[in-house]
Image (cartoon, rainbow, N blue to C red; front, side, top):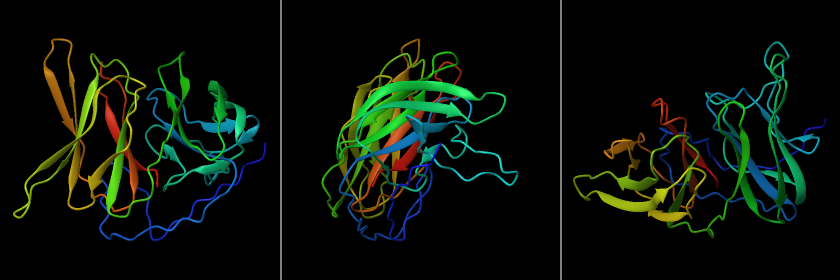
Length: 257
């Protein structure tokens, strides 16, 4: 099976995972790709093995082999997003069978699959979600905002399991000696497999993402990400994943553009 080539153009940019901070506001200038669709992949199923993602017989998530020459895949604990820095793989538009396949010898085989249609010029993220025996390849369309170098943008995707209620999300700009704390709502009562539109935020200062849900007794539980500093013109997705039932929920902040 051949690996598909993809294009990702970066100007002094590093991958952003939860907890990383970027300091220098440098505008990105991306060379346009004029045909096909665009897709990225995220491993968000805690108990699933490492996987590679395929469209039909073509492997899209091409990772380097390890020192022993063994094929590697996206894992839950590491290398969980492809492309790893930012951007999307450029793939043919149209109808496809999307598969998550484990490269491990002991667990080789299809972990999840879905029939998908990728529209010309559109952007998508495919999430591996769920629990053992019921993993899913869950596709979300990424309706990226127009370029705006005076703002940053963020949205929320909820793929955590066993939440007792929907999740409310705000981004909170930390107060300084010169500016007060500010809060921007990103989503309200977002259930599992729910996602929000991108929301504009000021590209200045340090932020945390705060998300709230209720436990089985109705008490509000508030969790916060570590801080990040958004860059003007950049677009982010905040993800919660894991299992509320055993308190293993964690979060990712990834850069879409």
